[in-house]
Image 1: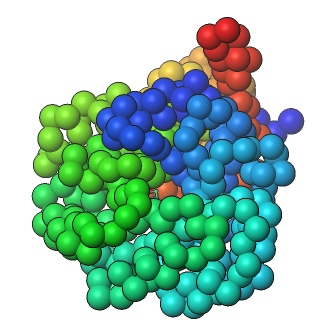
Image 2: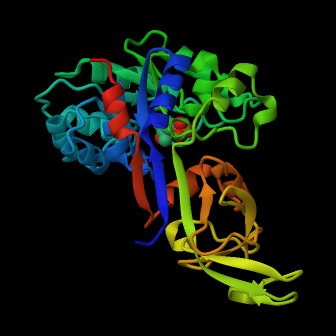
Length: 372
Ligand SMILES: *Cc1c(COP(=O)(O)O)cnc(C)c1O
């Protein structure tokens, strides 16, 4: 077997879920869109039997969860893309976000058979999706008086919750409260960053994504964090650790180059390990790479260009060789550091993971740990 293995610690996933839910209060949707940010949606949802509900982006992602026997509420964050999808929402008992006039029209035209909870989205300032402040009350009235509507949950999304010093979040909160105060139904404002850093955004339903996977949403903004937010993000546990093994060794003489473009030139004689992971696996390819790695527990770095299926790392110790274990990110190497050096964010790095074998841990242990 190719030794690229993403170990997914489901006990850490549950730890993060409980931490977020306790911080937020109320109920918490576990956001498992994009295959649970690369962690495997079905396995993660199944491990979160305690979750109040799940959120996915669109219908196919929800279908996959229902087919696997996941019975909790599921919210479609983008809502539906065509009218016919409401029949499927009805059948699978999904909660669609309604964020524009077309989705509203088709929702009202559908004859619902089962009770349904639409999530009505307000554009409180992100300007990407949602009803405008002056449109919200009419949409809320139409939905809440429709047949079989159990409740209308009011939802909005923050543009800058991960920048604690930005004034945007306070403006969006004020807009939401002004528009929604007279409208019935539960409220959902907070993504991971808002849940951790903006207590005023903690309402009835949190929506936790990145932090659920143990990754802090405050990659570049830790300086402005409140002590509470700092403590909470510091208590998250990385769910995924991506590891591979050295399967080839080379001795480079001083001045020799290695890999595509011959961009790395050995400053002295050095030993290099070839490892099974490349950009086709989702590892970011950047022009000049010296990303950190851990080799049998010893800090080292990527050298040369990342290829499609392979890359090369410096072997810092004589005992490193074929079979040495290389951590690419996770427990010790933060995925945020890899993302930052690659000009992107940890969300993208995690979502791009492909081809790695997923090894789920703690499933059995935790079952036996459940109270009888
Ligand atoms: C993806 C998403 C979330 C989760 O965001 P995180 O930053 O990963 O916690 C929450 N709400 C909406 C509407 C989303 O699309």
